[in-house]
Length: 257
Image (cartoon, rainbow, N blue to C red; front, side, top):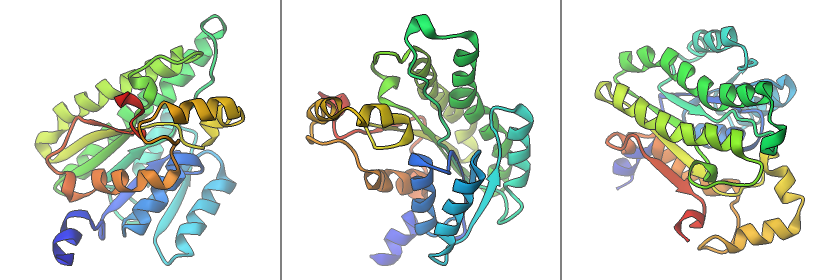
């Protein structure tokens, strides 16, 4: 039985590239993939926190490499795609976890903040994935995991730009699946509920909102980062080889109510 489970979910010998890996969901998912025996390349802007994340993984005798990059720069996206293959070989797992949310009212959104939100949350996942697909094909296939949101499905206050980007991620995930799955590259997305991260700091500073969000779930609580582990390993594994173009809500049943 152990060998059967390992054949499906063990990530040994595979290489994962994770953006937004210096904090929050990206950092946690990078650690989870490393614990499942993938060799992990971490990408983020904050060199100190990114190197700290890599050191935390290395302290467990697992393999990780940090690439500091500002993904708002088109040239940096191309550089990351090139350098990602240097430490362990071409990535066959990509987690697009980098994201921003300015939480602006519609009247306060500027062209600059709108474009920046779409660039990081929607454009980078596409162009980085496209740059890595040939390497995945050469290895016989790959797994792309995008990060969607509750706002992929529902509107929230002060979320027009962010919601538009995350609605776009659900369709981009389907488009990636349509384009690349025939070559063995599957694309899926995780839509987290409310988790304690830097992006949700404003929410978690308000105990009333925290309690209200927990009450809106079927389970009756908000998420902890460990709740993402099973979905992360599954969608990165060979066990998900016939699942593509799907969005898995890890939200405690928030969207089920």
